[in-house]
Image 1: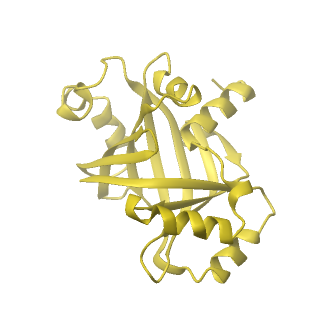
Image 2: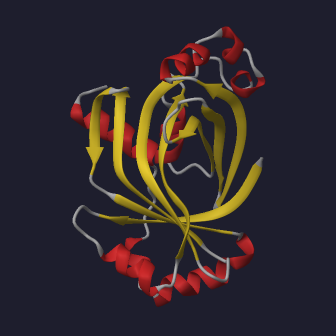
Length: 216
């Protein structure tokens, strides 16, 4: 599955609940039940993908393994998320079902995975880096022109399930098709959201946070 879209992120610090009033006042409707997102990120040993993002390169990517809620025999996916100028492209491929986290790790460390078309087309020295876990809620406007996710209770692990830090931020992300850009830009202006719109990558922020903490 390949998805192309535009994204804008808005950052709320701990204790700032104004995003809840924004969601209510803007008439967003909840579309899915809350889910726990689990992601294992891959990068080169020199963290090329992190530095491409920090340096603002117009063509950059993130590679990750993702599953939802508990891993107990649930689907696990390999995702490539690429930013090409302002457009976000995400490619998602199912890699299978796994009984538990240890079974998944065994597969990710196997030659079968590293020699597969999923990871083999990238540089040979891609390795697992950071595990990120958070709670996500999903919303959409009644006109279907704009989707919204709210991510909170973000935990970043240097070695799951231990050595983790909590991030205090709540992240709102607007997701929409290019054809709806004018509508969304006017919506942001009307809702006075411009001052909260920031470039924010959980992976990059986690990498920086771990380095500052001395855990990596």
